[in-house]
Figure 1: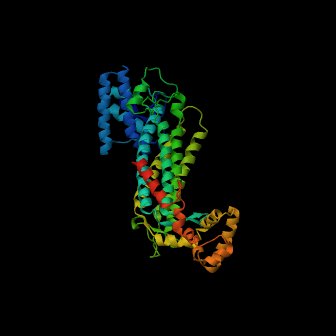
Figure 2: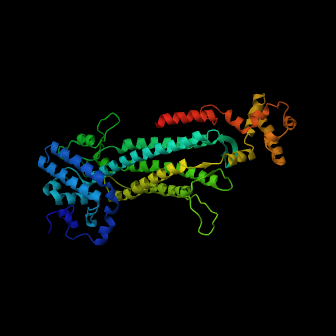
Figure 3: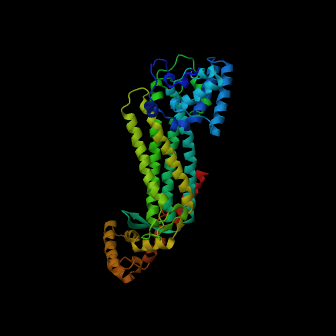
Amino acid sequence: MSSNPLDNKSQAWSALFSEPMSELVQRYTASVAFDQRLWRADVAGSLAHAEMLAAQSIVGADDLAAIQRGMAQITAEIEAGSFEWKLNLEDVHLNIEARLTQLVGDAGKRLHTGRSRNDQVATDVRLWLRDEIDAIGSLLVELQRALVTVAEKHADVILPGFTHLQVAQPVSFGHHLLAYVEMFARDAERFAQTRERTNRLPLGAAALAGTSYPLDRERVARTLGMVDSVGNPALCQNSLDAVSDRDFAIEFTSAAALCMVHFSRLSEELVLWMSQNFGFIDLADRFCTGSSIMPQKKNPDVPELARGKTGRVVGHLMGLITLMKGQPLAYNKDNQEDKEPLFDTVDTLKDTLRIFIEMVAGITVKPEAMERAALRGHATATDLADYLVKKGLPFRDAHEVVAHAVKLAIAQGATLSELPLATLQGFHPAISDDVYAVLTLQGSLNARGGIGGTAPAQVRAQVARHRARLG
């Protein structure tokens, strides 16, 4: 029999058991097939723990050196693809520990002093997710920059703004895109806030009650960069909560779900705008597919899939909330089920960010089609009402007057600006020839120059603000 107890699954945690785990149960309970991706975090956490154990004279300097040497070899093996992941060792943590013990003997066995897999896995997931949040934050900056660049280029392009999917008022296409910049900026804020609560150290909580060894948890936190905004060690302060808390995973998935909702809204508009009924934009061919039967088709598959993948991420959020809702303190095996939805959420969001960064930059805008649509919808009706208010009419009266004018324009198949002055004056004598400056689409845009408005000058001011913010 091997001298390494971790080589025998029935003895991986205790000699208490009198029969080995069945092969079916091994497959059912094993997580190594998907939690391998935690290996870097596991190695980092183990090295920080080992350094602390040596500093506290819990293990010797020779043991620390052996652990560091073994972990370096394990890192090289995993990076080279030669590391043998064993199903009977259940997870990434036991696989690495078993290989370490195989390489360095008793020193590898001493590594687990003062910790449990409960606080170990909680630490690993937090470390891994922290780095993923950083990557997502960088991608969100790139996406916002891409949107800002397109918005600046099209600040003067007129798009019909919609409410209820009916033409409402003209807006700058650049202004419309900047609305998504605001959404993704809020997403970045949420991820940053989630990172703060994720970046707290559970290690040292052991199984659930802490440990009798004189651990220096603050040292480990500093080594792993788990510090607060002013550089103080950030620790989980209650051992029971430390090993059982998955709020950070739920918070992250919630932020990711909302970010995907923003992608889904943008996707819906891209799909509509690209359709022949709108014809406002075109997407580059590399983001579209054709039809197996209809040769004329160019389908916007990427935004359609983003809509679909949004449901997938929202489902992961619901799954994680449901996973936690019935768990008593402290750790329960249920929590093994947190990883696959969390991992898939990260992968889906990062892939969506990467592809949209490129796709947004390649949008072809069709200004003429947008302007024709804005004219068809009598988008300057509100401007005519505002014009009459400035002439002294109460707004409700002005609203009624304009409604009659629009009704006539519809009947005649004309725009408001095409109605003769005498016809307009028939609706109210306060109307004079200066009304036509108000009824142009560009005039409507330019009139809305307050902060947050759609005037091209304001769009450019917002572009400058975003560029300064994004660096």
